[in-house]
Length: 250
Ligand SMILES: *[C@@H]1O[C@H](CO)[C@@H](O)[C@H](O)[C@H]1NC(C)=O
Image (cartoon, rainbow, N blue to C red; front, side):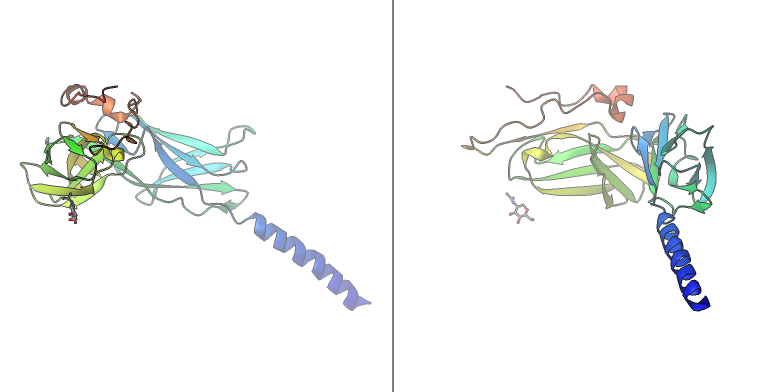
């Protein structure tokens, strides 16, 4: 019965092909930077790429071109690798991706990682209206000003997870923040940027204090010691010690 045989053969073959093609849909790797992706000129940063245990080689791509690779040594597992950059410069700032090889298949590229170098050229001035001490619900606007013309400004709140806010402006930009909540407390700095990946020196810090509205007894200070000392801001010794030092009084 050749037809039965063929059918059986196909069943086996087709099944194994289905299984192997499922196995070879490689997960996209994850890319990140430590201590973070906004790094002062001259400071080290490490790019991490995480794929799967079966990966045997990783490539770091910079502006779409191969810039470094890591191969499996002996038979160690390699679910993630590190690519150290000893000193951040204009030439190491830009967009990175990573990919990995498993068996004979390359993964898809990771999402992009944008590494920004700060500490270029000038120091902007940051101020806040109506002032650094506001009541919950009040609107606040930060003004960032730079003598030399640029086109983009960034406002960044201290802390690992904060995302920079971006505004366009030639010598100055306003960051309207809307009604304040205690979560907005913290230390802010602004930067002028010369291109997407090269920012100015940071402004002096502005420490924003948001107090509960009058009669609001439910208000409690949040994260009084959220500054963990490991932040990249540590590398600005001339600016971190100055400014508004008044903390929550308990
Ligand atoms: C804050 O700004 C919003 C939007 O512009 C406005 O509607 C609101 O009245 C302002 N609140 C205060 C307290 O000024």
